[in-house]
Amino acid sequence: MARINPNYSRLAAGYLFPEIARRTREFSAANPDAQILRLGIGDTTESITPTIIAGLHEGVDRQANVATYSGYGDSEGKGDLRESLAGWYDEIGAKIDPSEVFVSDGAKSDSSNIQSIFSTDSVVAVQDPAYPVYVDSNVVSGRTGDSVEGRYEGLVYMACTEENDFFPALPEGKVDLIYLCSPNNPTGAVATHEQLEGFVKYARENGAVILFDSAYAAFITDPTLPRSIYEIEGAEECAIEISSFSKWAGFTGVRLGWTIVPKALRCEDGEAGVLHGLWTRRQNTFFNGASCIVQAGGVAALSPEGRQEMQGLVTYYLENARIIRDALAELGITVFGGDNAPYVWLQAPGGMDSWGFFDKLLTECHVVGTPGAGFGPSGEGYFRLSAFGHRENVEEAVARIRTRLTL
Ligand code: PLP
Image (cartoon, rainbow, N blue to C red; front, side, top):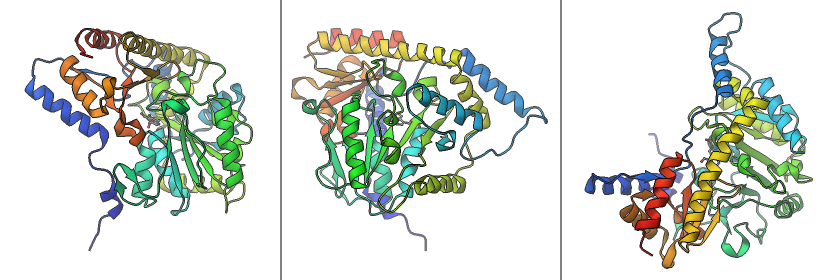
């Protein structure tokens, strides 16, 4: 008789976004005339730029000609895209060999699959609050106990609070896998060189591996802030980096990402090369490569023209973030992030809890955001607004907040 994976029943009830959708649906049903504006989910809204579209078209056209048609490609990705990505790392001062770049269909799948090459009894540390995939993939894989009052037993929560500028202190005990995300979803905080150096030192001393999610690296405008963990000396021995074209190129629907597993990476029982070999094996066994059409788009995105156009998109969203942040600050609401990240993280006013503020914003302003509590226990009392949106919608949402939100 087939039996279900019992770890699924451990997943905390009601994933964040379905619960947001449910409450929004109920409100709409009761208030059919209300025009709801969504600053909730971090999904891009602006169209893909001409150079990248031309690259995608070229990828399609190659499939129409028997001389250029390609079937399955290498599951690690096409050579030209791996080289272009290694070239981008080189520009920011990180030495990555193309053979260390694994192209994928996005950072979400990689960030949930990466744990599979590590022992099931690994002790896992996550930033709190965090992008939920890191926690849920480890829950389903059996690395935690039950969720008790919003905290999974056996998981190490590294609190990110106003007191530590939303970047955690080093774990007190010994942990094996450390998930870090910078620029951070949901807090919008960006780790400094010094902060990352501390974690790299910890990981090297403890045989731990850092899983570094840089999906929002393109939003870093401050040149003093690192865009990759490999800007830190020694990180190639203790860190895997996972990243994406989703927010950079507007590829949330197109799907393209990458993971760097350096050959120098090692862990307690794996010499240099072993983890690189395991991820190669994992991808060859369970993945048949990202779409060759989409990879052609990725190569175009990394061309000088593509890069300039992507920068235009990033600048547009960052201006949205500024508009949101400035309006909230003028109202006396405490705001964080939004300067090197597409997320504004705010303290729910008047000591409200996250879901209380969600309901208030929805009922008074007809604006949907994301309750901080959905990202982990330290997110309680906070709220995330996303800067992804058409400018006119962002401006309208901000105008409603200014005029209708009772504080
Ligand atoms: N990592 C973080 C921190 C994210 O916020 C997201 C999406 O919102 C992803 C990864 C997913 O990226 P992708 O679209 O490449 O799967």
